[in-house]
Length: 253
Ligand code: 13P
Image (cartoon, rainbow, N blue to C red; front, side, top):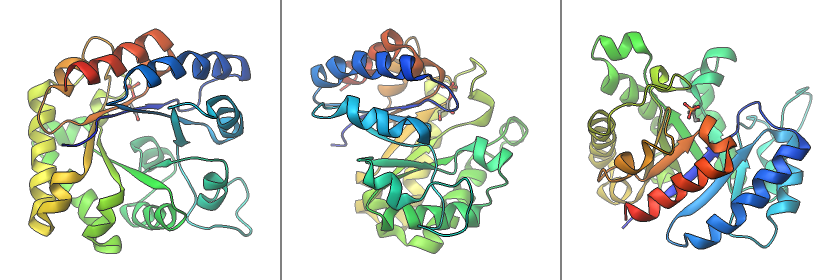
């Protein structure tokens, strides 16, 4: 039985005031839903604040990205070791926005995954297809290619301590959620690919759905056998909506 994980990805949003209000509001639902793990991934500049606010609570947190290097002349970057020092559990890696706007290739993503894990963080590997690829029926092929690139560099056992998030790009921030059936099919295919390498890993790894996962769509998605929670963008910025999503994960158990 896999523990459901509901994770917010705040992206480039927030102020000191809004972050304080949001984290304070999420501590109670995180505690009230003990069978669900709840986490928020924050812009790096807010992670220290989240650390202070979340101290002693059930709320876990992470970064939205991490560099490959742990130190050196890499202006503007945040290293996995620094992120770990601030109490993060998770680091998102390979989000489609980073692949698109920061030219992160499969190779870069695989190496970031390695650095994140080496620092003692849990990588949350994002994979997913564009609208054009979806319309051409290439969804599974794209996901397999992105996943294999990480397996080739890190080995299948690396996924004993990692999370996968399937995020169809056409559903991100568009209000168009993949139907539970579409998402379930892709998740089952991801698990089948992993099972070719290791049945244990395939059975144990959490596979989250992301892409307009919101208070209305979450329950039906989470009811699917291969969907183990959500990576939530816009709806994670609103405490009542994110709380409903957390509660949906408990109800779907
Ligand atoms: P939205 O929930 O805003 O569609 O974003 C999804 C996402 O990209 C989470 O990483």
